[in-house]
Image (cartoon, rainbow, N blue to C red; front, side, top):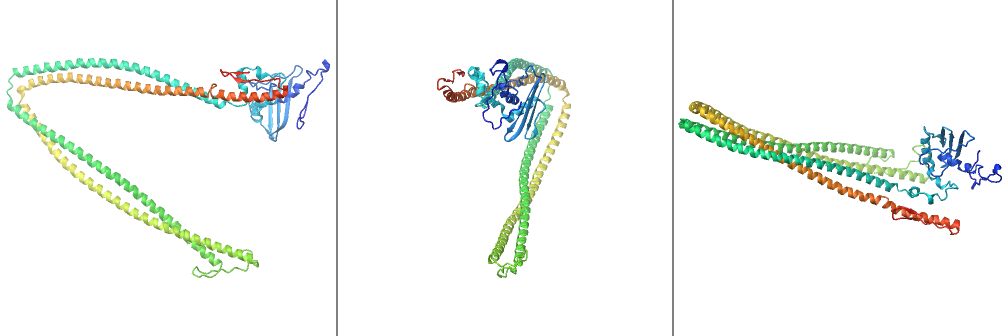
Length: 556
């Protein structure tokens, strides 16, 4: 069956069912009317299919159904063909002479929806059994239908995004809670270790005091029970030791002086080298400026020569003679390009005006080129002077660096000499002390025992110092964990505030915020427009009331 619809206006379908008298039901009127809708959407329901499946319209006496729809879309011809069998189907789409059929039927349907906007077919196809569908539909379905009039996607997307961000931040808060709990456990363990370390330090302190007292008592006992009359040797050794102490003090003073002078010299040299680097950089920049202005001057000079040459050529072309000759322009009697005679005065005036304009432009070009040459020459001269100044400053700075390096080198060499002499003295005193020590064999055993006692005391002191260091480290660890917990709590509080703010955004952009406000306006507009049609169709006997309830439901 082929039926054209182009330029036909309103088409009424009627029929007679010969099997049931004059009743027209079942003769195929609806099938013809809905055939184009089925071809476009795959459904005979004006509402879009949620699952995208094609309606099964094959009757019991046929193997397949097929509809071909031809027409124009945006002044371009299209052909759309849909076929449905018992177990398979096909869909082809040609537009403006191009086959746009895709690999799958679903992809082809999506492409057709994009071209035709078939979601708007609800405003064209109205079945006879669904006129009150919106009034009988659920609240959620009604709102879904209203979304086609005024999309709430932007507010829904904003709400979704805010809610997603809120969940993400809540996860971060939970993560921070977990981290804080772990760090609190770490803090508890660290405080236990700190208590243990403090007890250990107190115990080691008692041991140190006991060891010192015992060693002192044994040393006094050894010294009092032995013949220890070695005052001369001890005096000599003490004298040597005092001299060694002075030598060490002198060496330490010389080393400190050497370190200070070396640092001061290095600092001064580094400052001068930094200044030299700045001067060198300035010198390079000045050299680049000289090159730049030299090129600019050369370019301007070439332009001046070119302009002067063009001017001379132009004067020679019109027989004006040299520039110094103020001869007047003589209009030629014949055209220089075609050789024809120029008889009209208007043509001659035109040629004279053209030549004068060319001469004026050539003169302006020469003047501009002369100005460029003059400006480039002045800038080049300044750049050259600046380069000379920078070069002189670089040389002066290098000379000053060499002078300062020699000055500091001489000072350090002098201190090295003094330091070598002091070290030699110290070495000689060490040898003398070793020689005098040999004379003290009588008290060697006593000194050995005393030394062992002192060594034992030092060992106990080392244990005490180690325990004290461990205690201090544990104190720092407790403080570090406590600071970390404070930082985590601060981050958690900040995130909690952001979560509260994001929750506020979700409420504002959600169904009870902006969306409810927009929906209320759409409901009022829909009621007003619908009532206009109801008044027309029912002479005012039918009325529609639509409003948004307190729980955002639509009351019909």
